[in-house]
Amino acid sequence: MRGIVVDTGAWIALAVRRDQYHTAAATQARRLARTLTPLLTTNYVLLETYTYIRYHYGHQKALEFDTILQNLVRSGRLTIVWITEETQARALEIFRKYEDQLFSIADCASFVVARDRKVREVFGFDRNFLTMGFILRPGPSVPTRCHREF
Image (cartoon, rainbow, N blue to C red; front, top):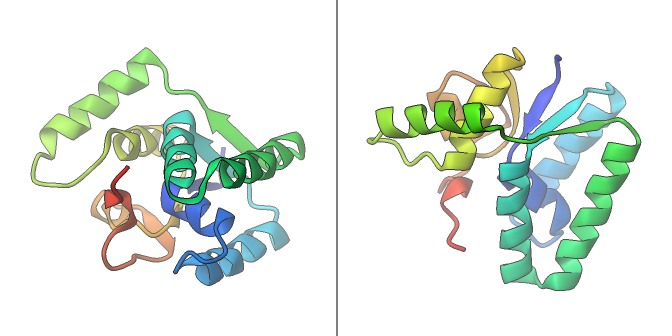
């Protein structure tokens, strides 16, 4: 599958209008919609996203995010990859190997899924994807988005 992996920071920025990256994320989402680029994300990324939105913006906002996701899945635009035991093991190998990096397990699982599916591009703001050789659009944020506290 060709397409683009969607990371936690992009989902949050799309779901929360007052997020500092909302405008950049919305512009990128419109670009992807025009080109009908397939979207790919993992259940780990979605868990991070639901949790962050719930804790910081409330239950209703998390439900609104869920509606967006369900519409994307129903329309065939979004594929959610469920992390298997084997993918989890490979993600943990990356996590252990790169102790000098601030990779989350969700990041590492996304690295594995993207590589397996030969996807080179990531929709997000997390510099960790650049570190692992992916193309990041719209681009990195300062500070990196993956280090939000839950």
